[in-house]
Length: 191
Image 1 (cartoon, rainbow, N blue to C red):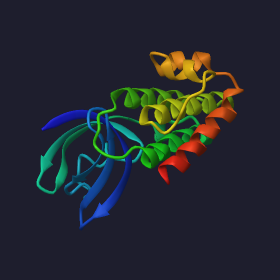
Image 2: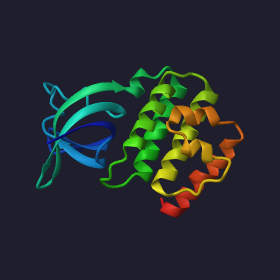
Image 3: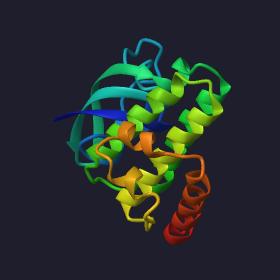
Image 4: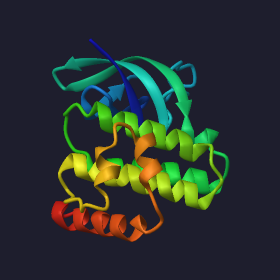
């Protein structure tokens, strides 16, 4: 049994009462896991396993894949978001996670960056602040995954110890360059 923190990136109905979840875990990367009877009204895991939730989860490796044992909700950033812009910012980062992160590979730094970025975005109602955190998180994610070659102007954003330190280096002129990185990553990944 493994206990780790995770972001719920999506869910799919399975059988009568079960559900499959796409989890981006701190210690194991992106995994699919099944929760039994979670769609039943009496299920205690229902509220913790909502999309965009940050959870502490115990995972069991079985013959047919990962199964979810117990869950503890650490918060749902979509539901806690200040407004429509903040919810859009949180949704954007989860969509990018689903798009670019594949397979079971530990990426604790990426996980920490994204949780911090999503937490700040959820509390913000300023367009510039939301865009800035999204762009820095995306640049760091794409560089870590090897999809982006970073120029000297963006290097301080990538090499900073934390995403918070990287945001201090951000200037509005970086936005166009980061958009090019995302486009380049889409071409390289064939997504």
